[in-house]
Image (cartoon, rainbow, N blue to C red):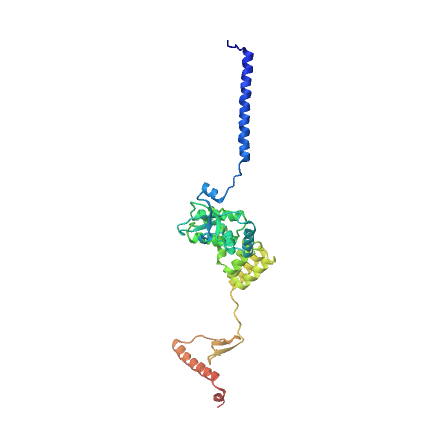
Length: 336
């Protein structure tokens, strides 16, 4: 005969079943947990990364890597390249370079960010380098991505900007300084001032970049003005003064203004050492012959008719020819 359960018995039976179910679940979780603990650790390798993103991280031949045609940096320190090469030897390459594909460079990888790392790897003789492939970059994105990466690391100077911005405008990547200014977040007047530095001789621009911590845009622009007005020697003098910490921007502005004033006056005329004046028999002045210390002689006459001018020119020529012959004749001929 079946046992009839009251309410209390039903509750106790249900609790017992629940305890058994909970115990089974705990046992099951312990088995799974132990299995996970006993499993070998997961190691992420280059191959596994490539299987996840086959178009991104990879090892590529350094011989297939070409520089960014719109590289925002133009000046690199040999010392920092050597330091990075030593770091590669000790720690390996920590950060992949960024590359992309461009139709202008078929079968090549164009550097977006990592020119310095590539140079360091080449100096070591490495054959391959870790790279992160970026797709869908046009020339503007190619420049801007590299520009902002360098700015974040504070590696880029105004002298790098000068050369890069001029090329971008020359190649019509940006139609004018206004569009370029919007892209890089700079006022067009600033863009114009920076690009003006490209008229400096390359060796002078290189030296400024080498001492970029001492030479700012204000220094460089005024040295350019001094160069235009007084020449390379004066410009080099003032650049050295800046590097030595002896010339502020205000001092350079004063020097540039002084050179502009001297230029407006014009070169000083060399004063003659002596002169011979000519008069007609009636005392009317005809002109003069000025003799200068540098060997020059200037004849100035006035009030001569066209017909007389020709006659006078022939006589003057005869006199000068005779004088020149006597000047270069052997001493024996002159004595006889």
